[in-house]
Image 1: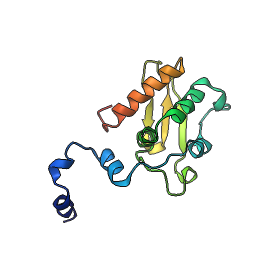
Image 2: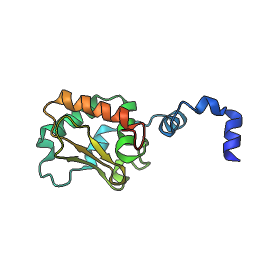
Image 3: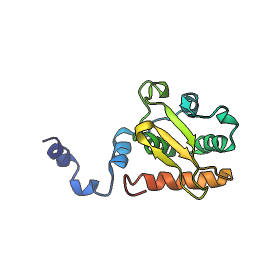
Image 4: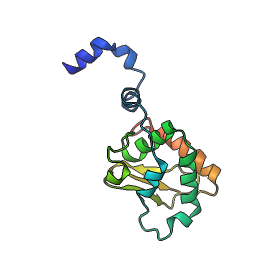
Length: 147
């Protein structure tokens, strides 16, 4: 019944080009993603000085340079939701995690939405990280089995 009511307002054929993530953004709007709040509440498993690692520094520089819409895409890619938790990132469980992996720098970042984790290869430059992350967010928006 709910679906029939929905389609009585917005015809189904108008919604077909959009996936569930795009519909969520259209219906709920793009949340304001605070980089400082996210950064303050991020964990770096098995890293003793994460902010001293170039790839981690470049990651945050990249996030700061993103549009708010792209930050929402990053959240979608890493957590499975484009929405900021109602209590901010301090209430996100499990916490947002950034890890390095041993993949070659030609590989894309990998996310594990069940653990709110993004794994980054040891990229050689900011530009390489920015390029690979942008591609991962674009391809990752397609859903399971598409990236």
